[in-house]
Image (cartoon, rainbow, N blue to C red; front, side):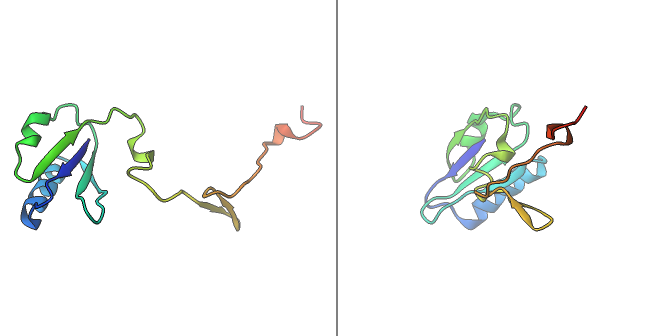
Length: 108
C-alpha cells in the first residue's frame, strides 16, 4: 500500500501515522522525495479499509498495490543488490557466468 501525505503535513501527524501502522505490525518504507512525503506499507494490508486511512489527518491519497513481490520492488528497494562471493561481485550491472557441476563435459 502506498500512502501519499498532504503537502503541509506536520511532523507530529506524520509520526502518528507511522506509529499507527508500526503498532499494527506493518513494515514502513519512507520513499519521500524533496517535494513530497510518501510511505509504503509492507505486509498483508487486505484487512485495512482505504477509506478509514484516507480519513486520518494529513493523508492525501491511498493506493493499494497488488504486486506479489513488494519487498523486491524498486519502489521499496531502489539500490541494486550486490553480493560479493570471494571477491567476485554479482549484481548491480556486473556480468557473471555461472555453471553447475553437470554443465561440464563428462558429467554423468
